Length: 287
Image (tube, rainbow, N blue to C red; front, side):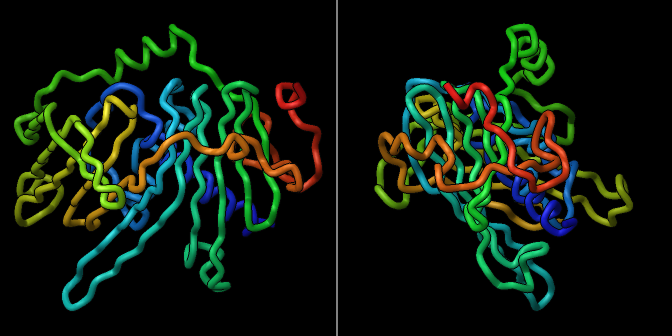
């Protein structure tokens, strides 16, 4: 049971991280790159994953694309590279779907089998779901909607002017940048923001200065980050990229498969708890 909960929790964390990246509405604020890290850096930290399943609703901009997250670490005489791929889709009402396939990670490493999970947020029904596609089960929760006061407070906290936070950080912002979709070769206008942060020698016991760089390309027309690259010599390089960006997705993506079993769980949202017992759908989902 512990392995099941841990595995599902890890998938939920990854989906939440991706959710924060691809659901950004308005130019995303500059994060403090390089201040957190470790073996799971990049994959789990994209977009501030600890923000949960949130992200503002972006309505009127339906689309579908493939996302790829590649993490590479280079060591003397050796290189470790891992790639995670998935699907992101958004409906006209702002509902979102994220599907990700995980292999050779955590409790699934020994099996060697690809595990597939999806996160669905249905704005019209007011529900959000974590779906274990492999096991054909899902968990359902009421969708949390930010109030105006919460949104204003959060915006005031995260808003930063377009300048360095300290003498050790430099930011350049090109609002006339471009991003070329590698699949369709379509060129999208983007805000191209680059950040370089330097940890001076001796600041954290380091012999020489450590330079951390990041670049984020945000499309206002799509309301999405199309590409983000973060390089920290302590933890490697992580690249997030959207490709094959297309039009309106199938409406069926935004509701769990009717043949799947709804289960209870722990760690994904309000009211979730341990167990695999069947439970009734939330009221909003019955409408």
